[in-house]
Image 1 (cartoon, rainbow, N blue to C red):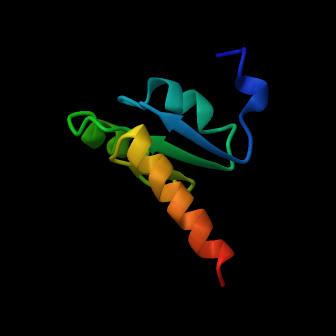
Image 2: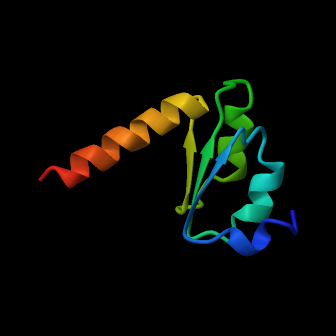
Image 3: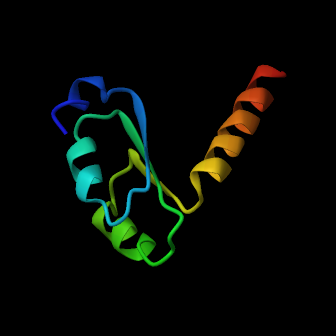
Amino acid sequence: METFTPFVRGHFVEYGAGVGAISQRLEPLAEKLTLVEPETKFVPQLRSKFRGKLKVEVAVESLEQHAQQRRRDRGHRGSG
């Protein structure tokens, strides 16, 4: 954790957030935290852990799905 802590700033994305053990340590460091978790069995605990934390978003999708959506979002914003 100490290795990458200095680099956690702005909008940070954690892929494979699981039940949020590392996410809890990242949350105070990031301005916005997106937790990407494809396994639906982990999502209820993850959402419960971060309920009420406005800067935390839980995305139930794979890394590939999330990356594709981010590309689409960036392309859409740039064309207008």
